[in-house]
Image (cartoon, rainbow, N blue to C red; front, side):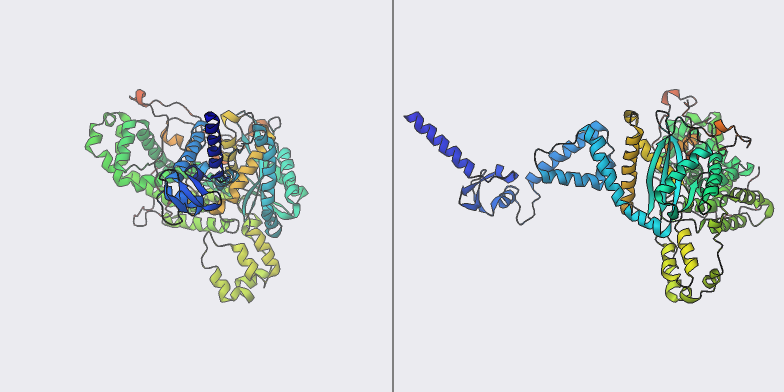
Length: 636
């Protein structure tokens, strides 16, 4: 009888405890119960027994010792850290880059998971690779409709390039450029096919049909001979569509050729030998970083010559620190100061002629590098500026060389030779009808003060096509043509940057991806990045890059550097078709062989990787304003 009474009492207590807690997953109910099932506002604290009014929200504030409505106490912090711990563990185990967790899509995923509550299930591998990938492709296509409207209004450019993946499969891609940015259209595996002119033409023709013939103004590619052959085929079928050479590639060829002139090549070789010596040994590298306050003299660039320019600039900026290093007691005590290469490095740094040569090189290269910055970024269409900027660069180079013809003639000849039939097309020159005189004389809307004031500042935020849309009503034909031309890019480098997305997705662990799935993944990732681009920092220097492969020949000795044009051998002779048309990566980012380098007398401390310290992003455009370099600045 007694046992049944106890059992009944326990049953009643259990039932009462159940009724005194709300049916909620809120964490607050772990620390409080209702005083009365009929008074839902009064809650009793299980830790101290105090009765509070305000429901579960008040009990959480009471536990965390918070007054008011801000819940930021012990419970919240404990549970938040638990979630962060799981996120970090996932990142560590799966080797996910930390910056991936800064994306808005990750924050949205966290919010959706929290709103769902306990029991949420993650998608299966099949769902991620098929079901939801296809849904995301459709969603991205829907978000790109605003780009399609821009293509119809102001026209667009088709860009194509080729790449070889980790399984030695050749992949070609198609991108579309407009004032809104670059859109990845599609890719195609072509491992079994030769990259002939006909093959490239057919692929480009497919892209033109997808975008709409009436919307395409030009096709932009590098200067490879098979691309130039495809341009002739396109001109026969579609004479209204231009095929233009990549301005970034062409300007890089100019800079490389100028850099091969003996008087400039001597300085580049000296600078390269200096950086190779410093980076070859841990002791010299650590000594250099000590004197430069942990700043590097080698700075990666987006192209091979951009890197050379940035490194020369870096050397010039650290001239005082480097001279102090090679004159210090630490250098005298260093064993590498006694070897032949150490003595050569010391002679180079303490030589007045070397630093005058660096200044002269920078003054000659800087005008073209400024144009390279203009054409190698996606923030602003450059077609309307590139020709005029090159003419300006030529005059600046002449002035830098004291306006003496024998000093600048070889340089100007190189620029004009590379420009011919590449950067002097009607699109670049923009020679138009008699309506142009109205614009030159500032008649009608062109002469109004608001129109003149609107174009006073020509920076990255100034949209010249919009200016013509607003103030070109006095010359409607000229306005229509100007809006299309001034919305065009002059470079295909944005298409080549697409390969970094391929490389991120097609890693060694994921090299079994089918080409169709790889295409869908790149389509989603590349175009999703485009949609978020407006939120990114626009002040990032365009020439500074992160591809360390381009710096290897400045820190590792005896690396071969192939700077010949596609379709030509080292003697500028035509290559065999099969040889010239091999599957390739972009001509803009030539690959380097990773030869092993053993530092002299320090094999046990061989440097395999170099972590570059931050050296800022500012690129100076004018050099040696207070230094006279004379009529013949560098003796060859």
